[in-house]
Image (tube, rainbow, N blue to C red):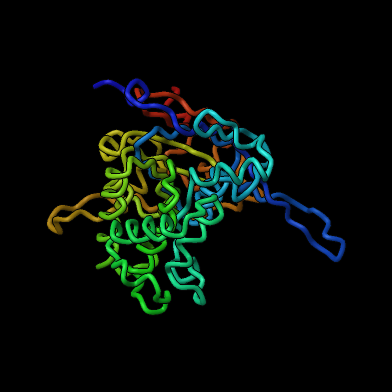
Length: 329
């Protein structure tokens, strides 16, 4: 099988990306520590793929997604998007680029202005980015609403008049109205009923194929990510610890944390039993992460070097990287 690197153009290249948030106390806001939300992350996203980003709550997934589209500024590192280094752009230069990358947030209720009609909410991006012809704007709004399964006749209705699933479709329409190259999907179905989740996931996949989109799909649910993604990256305490093709994840993942996440997915046949890997203890604080491998405090396969030396991200095979001392022995 020919590797992904030889078949696809690299759309995003993240290099040594760091985002630390200061912890401040007292009336003088003295800095007493740093939350290492994203800590030296390097990651590639290829044109036309869906990259799934998985990890427990608080591991830095959403922060990484916001950094990628410059909703947050990095502490250091580079974000190369379509051969342009976004970290060197001024706010004015960045505004021109924003039409090429958009985000879909978790909660559609807080994503839409309750005082604005859905037509006005979707139209706002077109106005900002210079589509001056009103008829052209209305035409594009009608087209994108039909594409996400919402009647164009609903353009004058308000968000509260729609169900949760319909509101998320409207949020998707707003993200796609500018014809972006990259869409960050930050837990886009976790706030929806289970019965609606599959419909929205199928919609995103159909839109990806029809509009030639590239998606970064962020979720804590590995089973969902396995089904919608081409590749999967596993994040733990601000770092990427493994990435590989989603079709190979179940049989080829090597990191003990990835194996634990995989073991938590229930099998469809209740008569088949599998051993669950139960991790002990809580996730350590990103303010003071453990020395060496950050997972060693919970790792069932810990060896003596794990708390002394930080493992490097090794290339195990084509499109498969992992950071674990057990893999370098």
